[in-house]
Image 1 (cartoon, rainbow, N blue to C red):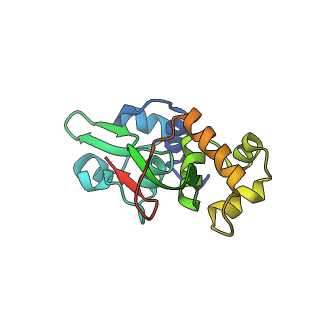
Image 2 (image 1 turned 90 degrees about the vertical axis):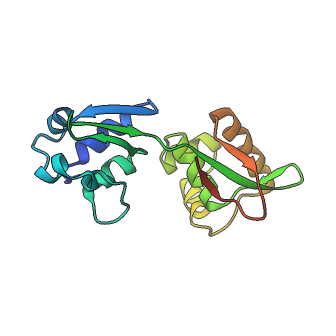
Image 3 (image 1 turned 180 degrees about the vertical axis):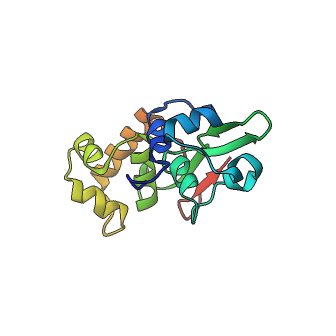
Length: 169
């Protein structure tokens, strides 16, 4: 989220929340952003849509790991919820095959930057970056460590088919 964005304070607030669901009134959001929401936010549900492109307000809540679950224009209240995701993984024997998407999802699930995640695993930050951009995959020994860290962190995954992919509940 762009530091200069009007909605950066909303992003920062949501990032600090540990709850699966956060309910805010429009007035609370306006207090956070230090200004008025546009009139379209009070009149059009579409303003609250979870769009990945072209909506700086959506970048705030989605970047913080939330989606708008419901909007009550009459009560001027919005419910943000963390989407439930279960990741499918492939195994080779007892080893989980960690790919770029899974590694990034695990790091984000733990709420860590690449540098913090690297310290947690005892590797360099560029290594995390290279895993997350598919420059190379973790070695078998590191895959075992990633699996243990994932299980300890409550990362939701299950053994799936040929490709590891994300399922939205």
